[in-house]
Length: 422
Image (cartoon, rainbow, N blue to C red; front, side):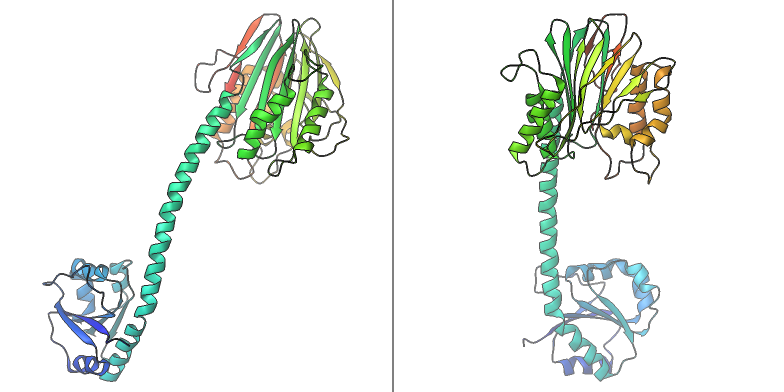
């Protein structure tokens, strides 16, 4: 074993006989320094142990803390403050959190002090290993922070691109206002929607929610679902297929793709006829649409239809709803079911139906309801891990002709879409 190296700092005192005797017993190479007059040398091999000799450790810590901290921080090694009088209760509070272990002792015999110094020196290799490990961990932490920042920036760009894939403008539909609300729970959303004209007098509407709101769900909703559900993309349906056929095709393609990170999709596929005001729609595991009529209580319209990606033989029921002037039909993803739910309660259609927001739908415009929805989400407590993307697509029949467009939340809402970005 190499000769131990002990650094001795004197605080206006001489070395007591028991201290000299202990150093001789240890057989250490001793460095003598004056605590306040000498400055620690950095870059030199650190001592195996440090002994601070003072007449009053409480006075040392109180009056000379700056000098003491310089020595403690210069090299991490076990340190013993040895004095005639020790007040150990106050000292640790004033020292704060030094970079090395500090102990206090007084009135030790030569052999007892030698034993402590020997033990301190023997722990040097362990402390060196811990110091190296701590340094390595700090380097890893810095690298991880850099990687996380880069990943977060990439996610933000991906989220922006995903929102750019949503319709920038909505078709002009005679006697119909189309309102859309889109608020991702995180940077990447599993929700998507599309509205396209499929004939001179009809439009097709798609609303889909891929499992989760991670990157896989976002990519699936932004490209895969949009491509499969958009009319005119497949032979034999230049003007759009029936809603149940579109969902059946989506179901088959998801199963055939054998996706590993995003297995299931809920969706609504619908068509609207300008001449009759009739909406034909089918759902694949999506929440039941809300029918809003002035002067009547809003109602959920139930139908059969499992999530896409579960069963190759799935069948999706076609429903027909005629909208009269003033009526609205709301399609939405399950994030809406969590709005206004008390902390600790699970989101559900039952909770949505009982909410004030739901029951006030007939007494105000859909536009106003969506603006309030945006405010509710924005002012709610920080979103929990169970928070979900929220998207609403509403068809409101009117007697006037309007053109639906897109606008960002926070801008003057003179359009049909409210899009809230994270």
